[in-house]
Amino acid sequence: MATYLVDKIADYVIDLKTREVPFEISKLVKERVLDSIATAIGALNSPPIKAIYNTLKDIAGKGSYGFGFGEVSPDQASFLNGCLVRYLDFNDTYLSKEALHPSDNIPGIWAVGEYVGVDGETFIKGIIASYELSCRLADASSIRNRGWDHVTYIAIASSVGASLILDLPHEKIKEAVNIATATNINLRQTRVGELSMWKGCAAGYAVRNGIFSALLARNGMTGPKPVFEGERGFFRQVSGEFTLEFPEDEYKIRETSIKAYPVEYHSMSAVEAVLRLRDKVEDISRIKKIYVDTFTVSYQIIVKDPEKWRPKTKETADHSLPYIVATTLLDGYIWLDSYTENKLKREDTLRFMDKMEVRVGEGFDNYYPKGIPNRITIELDDGRKFSELVIYPKGHFMNPMTRDELYNKYERLVKDRLSNYKDVWDLVWRLEKLSDIKELSEAIKEGLGK
Image 1 (cartoon, rainbow, N blue to C red):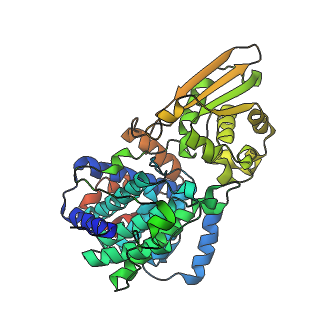
Image 2: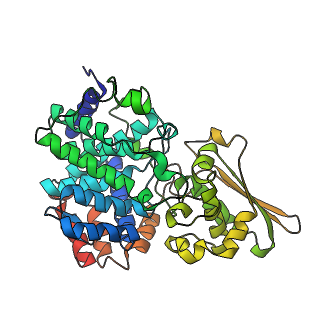
Image 3: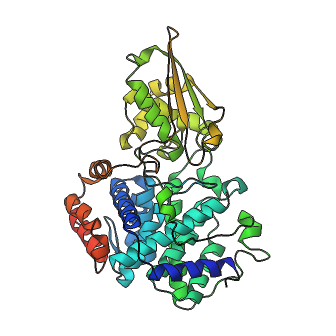
């Protein structure tokens, strides 16, 4: 019988090790591995990645493969590849009391898996463990309104996925969680106002620390306890009290969504609504007013800050609903090149933003977090109005991508950099049959030419 929350978490990991993974869940894992590979390779030339490369040149050791870099230690690979997966703001999302990106965990689980040489089936289970804990923590308590960032949960979840990969016994799983939870409380300031490069790197850093916590526990390190329930523990200092359950037949990965566009997830339906309107409005120069009806969480995260109305960085722009709507309306698309310095300063974009009124739509909060309603209404200079409402955009778990649609996203992001991208795609679909996941890393290494 579990005494503390860490006991219940450790019980879950031990149980998952012996379970047979349903085909449907294995398929969902593979889709998210492919999506993570795509977003990581798409970010290879990003400014923060160059900063990380330059840092690792001096401190790199031997161990896991850093995409486009070479061999580094498992924790460093977790950080580098984690930043690559997350930087474009294009990896998957889970929405609940807290919104987060469960695939942030994948690079860390992968790095530890390489380090110890696990097979594909174990790798899949490690990912499932980290997804399950990430999402159930997000269900339990919203910590952003208390001033803490969601990557706090990612650090804890990655320590659990790594514990499964490392085949830690019950007591050492608990210590991994104790260490990761006590030492990785992250400030929400990362996502407030003008956003910096760290917006896309905070999760990678959290995963790095979660992975290192599990490696320390493996070698006998103990952590503070009871880390959740204690006098100065997580419940009192960070989240408030909660409990977690892990029903055997439920997998939270089913409720995660893959992004169709490189934007903050709450704006995904707004992009789709704008694209529909572009087919109706022949002359966008005649637009007099743009009305955007959204929901409270969206308004708080990607609208209310003054910086969201005049973004100066890529990181702020992809978290700006006004910028995303205006840019999509002007160009008829939104993609990686939508955040260049020239586009951030484009006068037409600023004029459209000045014509925009964003408000919380009546009843829209009732849809969230299952749905993300955004309604765009365009008023022309002759008084005509056109409106589109989207609640479940393409890629949402209620409106999932087909395999072909996922392949189109994958191909578009990797084909110019990964010479053997079709082979890598096929290899991931055979993931559970791999005797060592290094085979997948070697294929990527070969395709990148490094």
